[in-house]
Length: 65
Length: 329
Image 1 (cartoon, chains in turn yellow, blue):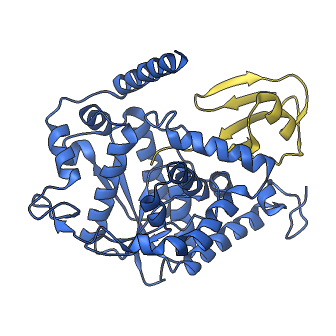
Image 2 (image 1 turned 90 degrees about the vertical axis):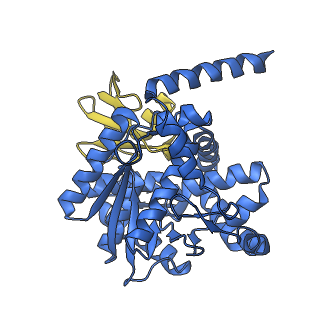
């Protein structure tokens, strides 16, 4: 599957199927600070992602005060 | 995963509530949390004229969206900070949001209206970028609210923001800052009332609100906030939250319930001697006849030739390298 990461924006390819939370663990991305989006829709942690999916993993932490 | 409310398919899990939600009931949960914050802290009345401080990020656009949805009369104020492409892009998101919903948006440009920008002010002051930025924004939001006859200024500070600030204040045991870290600052001495309706919602929930509601916002981090202290505090708190869901809300909301009353006497002291700035008339804590910090910043920064974002980032990275090497010795 194609995975789009942000800050900075980049794309990586992951071989095979994965559940959402397994993918986040594999990439070392905490669930509390990321959302997984497929076709503009949020995908919950237990959902299986298909090898042909295009997904965005969006960080949610912002910093300025 | 099923929605706690309707048992339909869930789209998001919220371990801190030990619950999963579908889109409809997630939005309902968010609205209820905002209504509870507004009610519990007496933030807003339906008759208030509200000015929302918008940045083009998820939190400020989400709170504007929610307040309009809940029936408040809310206009927006965006400040163009002059932080290169980041500022240009965030302005586009904000203007598009307002146009699509037919909402009133006022734009103030630091460069066009005051002759400086945040990278230049950072270079002139020699302090961290968030310092000049925060001070400029506070001053201009206050001014716009007073000049425009608004009853209250709304900011998009969420639970993560407040927990991170609390964490920083507690690490330094800065008792005066702790005493004043409140979700409502009442109108006094010429300053407008300021409120934070998102204190019961996390950043992840606010980003999810935007995705579900189809709100495009600037996802990229402010290039000048990169690696700042608050982001580090948030990462630490999120590690605790992963191990023990609900930590952030019990930390911050517990502070409001149990520590704020203890600190009330300290909050009531100080900052009573406020005089008008001799240049702009804004209230300032200085002595009679003094110039406020904002006017001093404008004077110094506008006299300096414009500085690029990249120059400030390069300097900041090299300072960090020097500090890291010094700490190894």
